[in-house]
Amino acid sequence: MTKTVTLNNGIEMPMLGLGVYKITDEEMQDAVDAAIKAGYRAFDTAHFYFNEASLGKALKSSGVPRESLFVTTKLWNDDQGYENTKKAFNDSLEKLGLDYIDLYLIHWPCPDNDLFIESYQAMEALYAEGKIKSLGVANFKQHHLEKLLAVAKVKPVVNQIEYHPIFNQKDLQAYCKAQDILVTAWSPLMRGGDLFNNEVLQSIAEQYNKTVPQIILRWHIDSGRIVIPKSRNPERIAENYDIFDFELNEADIQAIDTLNKNERQFKDPDVVNMGDLK
Ligand SMILES: NC(=O)C1=CN([C@@H]2O[C@H](COP(=O)(O)OP(=O)(O)OC[C@H]3O[C@@H](n4cnc5c(N)ncnc54)[C@H](OP(=O)(O)O)[C@@H]3O)[C@@H](O)[C@H]2O)C=CC1
Ligand SMILES: O=C1CO[C@H](CO)[C@@H](O)[C@@H]1O
Image (cartoon, rainbow, N blue to C red):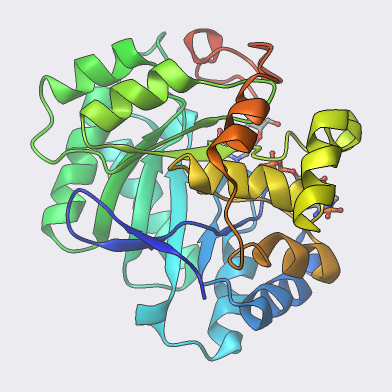
């Protein structure tokens, strides 16, 4: 049974969802079927992933009632600005085949265009119309949030940021917590690879009779972060969900915290601008 968390607007959000970046249209139906079967009800996509239509189609064919699903999508950098945001949102809504989005995020703050306030104001208008149930941001550093919070009428519920054992953003999470904003960890598994061979993680995994990815995901959840691991593989999708029958003790959480090297795997949000990442 998924653990949920209550957002600052009273809405319940699952703490584990399926990230679908790089899941192709051809792979989507099997991935969604496997996820629904395992118990996932939350899905994280973006205009930038170019798979909103196949995600929407797969969710529809799952037969799960709309009110039991939690769908997140994101405003792409090139679509920032008041009118552009409304247009981009409606486009995402149509592609997903939905009549509302559970959580809509500004994907990157984009310091060069300084449009995120305007974009957010358009999102507030869509929120008032009931087309977006919760508003949020992604890749916002503290200074971006301060600027937004100074004018926002509706508080963002989450900030979705890069977070994994090698890049631990504890200070930003603490700032978000003080503002009643939750952190969602993107690349929660650091996209796998060498991290899975880490000896500290392997020894904790043995102790709990779990796999390293399961330990990392549990570390996030036990530290108060929502997670959206991506997998296209049905076995790994199920494995990543099978983490609700144990909790890490404080010593193990701290041992994983000490793996931090402050190394982003991706660009600093202060240098990601409109037109980047095409
Ligand atoms: N807001 C933002 O700017 C960003 C948001 N995101 C969101 O976060 C989600 C997750 O992040 P992502 O960058 O995809 O990286 P993840 O940390 O979720 O890692 C995904 C990779 O790990 C592999 N993997 C997943 N589970 C396992 C497992 N149990 N055992 C072994 N390998 C595994 C997957 O391979 P396989 O598929 O073959 O199983 C894939 O290669 C994205 O899909 C997206 O929704 C991501 C980046 C930026
Ligand atoms: O959501 C995303 C998926 O990952 C990309 C990096 O590989 C990011 O640029 C983007 O923000």
